[in-house]
Length: 386
Image 1 (cartoon, rainbow, N blue to C red):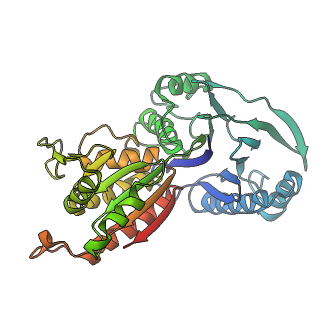
Image 2: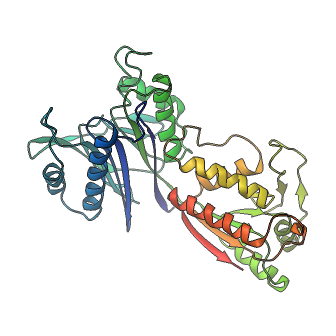
Image 3: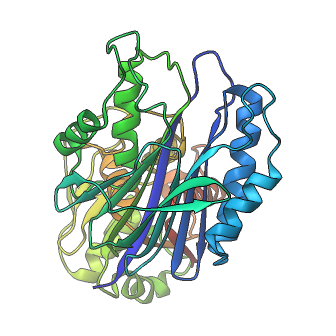
């Protein structure tokens, strides 16, 4: 069983501020992933600059295996000192872990991280380090499949102060909320969104502080092959489909002609649903041996819209898709389930599209934009053109 790491985050800007004072920076270097959440002092432009500097410096240094003492010392010496409070830093949380689940977590003045393990939230064991007069906590990581680490800025524990709650959202209550709502199949981004969305509710959608939640999850690799359109030469149909069907991966077919070619290759009937869960998305089909069969360009266009929302750090709509239309089903497979995605893009001109404002170039652009958004989600994407 091959394991992979994925990360995701969601941010709420302080009400009335255009810029967020929190910043999340990520880096993948060989087997290791590094995620840094920095919370700049105050809010607005100044906090944004502080958190950006902190996160970028730390992420670069940690991902290159520089000792944490040197990393913290660099941060303290680099950032300017606030005249009123006499402090210079932004607070930070650093996760540095490999695909075997081995690594470490460092925390400086951010709320204590939460460890989701075996279906419930628990605490990490932490040791105190004194670095340049600052208290930094270190946790050694030994993650197993479906474990999740959540790090957050203090906007989470301040949520609801003076509104719904007198003293903010206590850590114990946060953990209980996550215990009720996290499901083991959820992506890191979906889990981060659950907590950030709850904070927004407690703030009555007017956050009194910048609020950011970042999550890292270790999960099993899942490959997905997706076929979009037939190849230019009909003589290549069988060869094209055999490559698409090869390997132990989920199989998705997009497009009517592609579906017919795959069904013919597998020597099974192509069945079409007459249900319209969403009137703007054509119905799905069914082919034995294929996990999901959808219409082509219209479904991909809706899928691209869903992907734009999914990668937005400020979007609080749920990241799990419960609707049964083709675009939502496809989004769940590609955004939530897949770790490695391989496109098989046929460049044949579709006779059915003659006279319509749809051409091969439009399809290519849709696929390329979608691939870019999938990479932004941390997916490994390969594009094959035939």
